[in-house]
Image (cartoon, rainbow, N blue to C red; front, side, top):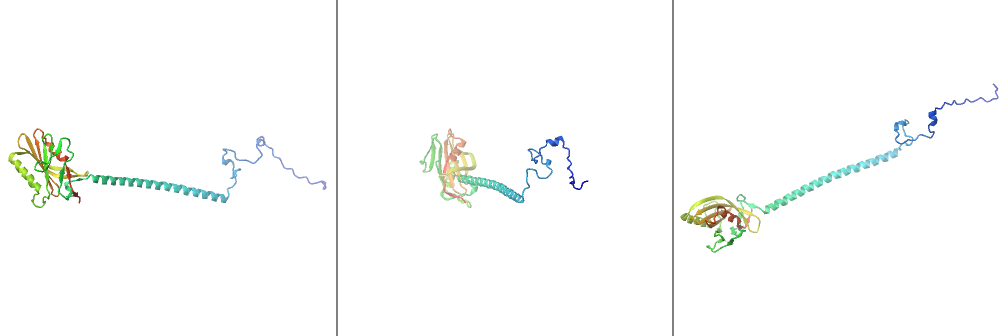
Length: 269
């Protein structure tokens, strides 16, 4: 070889290119829509750059803030429901209290309630209905009369009957005298023991009295009924009911009694 001639450089060997490779694009690969990530084995997708550490910290902070907000919202919602339920229960209890106080104003004072009277009870005319009117002509006693000829007269004691002794009040004596007089001329056809509730004047209260009713048939034309009403602490009311036989019925005396109203100063224990 001629030393003056340059040494020939080896030529790169060109690999044959397949027809399929000749059709592929030469620009850098970019992610195509709907292309799975596993088709890019290098790790990072061609169109995505590695996320810096600072950006990761910021993203984590945002996520933490969102979590705090979500948890706070849930807690507020739960507390709000509890407050609503407590308010509703409080409202129901207030409603119950108002109902209780309302029912207390419509109290029925029973014999077992030991209601103390501050004065003698006085019967006044109640809602007796059509046909009844007041009458004080008979011995000056309070009374009511009906167009059918029925009459009721009543009196009340100004002192209590002693519950420890056999002492009788003025009304007890009066009632007993009426009974004694009736026994001379008639016979007892019926005797009932029970109670009756009379309305208290000026309120919706009622008070229960012990009731002993004795019916006398003196003749074929008239019935006479003696009723004794006694309060729990000894006050007594006596009533005399006269009614023609043609107008008399067993329940009429009771109906009249229940229609009466009591003027009753009272105090409850």
